[in-house]
Length: 191
Image 1: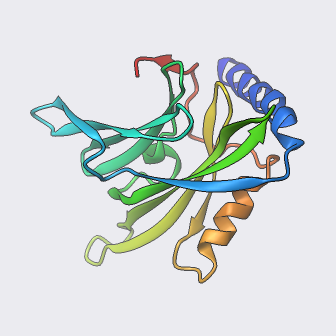
Image 2: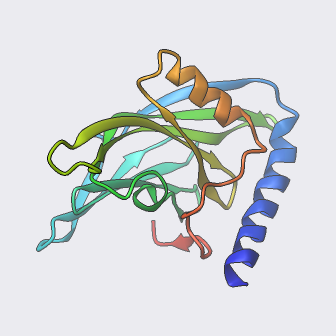
């Protein structure tokens, strides 16, 4: 029941945010580094090597890049410091993974103000279904961003010739539901 109510709350947040953004037809892209010297890295656990990098974003938003046990994820940090986890390690792949070097922000204008509405990040997953021959599987993780919520809505095979355009089309479709495995609690404030 709690998970249902949390999902309902996230849908409500996206619906109200979407109505404000939907009237704008112009969506553009901006790119920020997630593996650059502009990111501030901190060690979260010296024993396991878990670390978080605080990276610049757009229009007051930032990204936290999380690395733990050879797996990677991203959290969106809102201008007021709310941390919105995308939980790539539960939603995109449960296996080993690394991230690409940059994030693509999809930006719309709402009320004359530019706001990010989606995020596209390359996730280099490792398919270990055959432990003797693990395979690298490049994906584009597409996340929807609202004022108070964010979730992964789809992954796109990055090997497709038009993968970037496919990811942008997914990002533009405000009716795609969040993938299962995302956060089941309210966003936290710690960023």
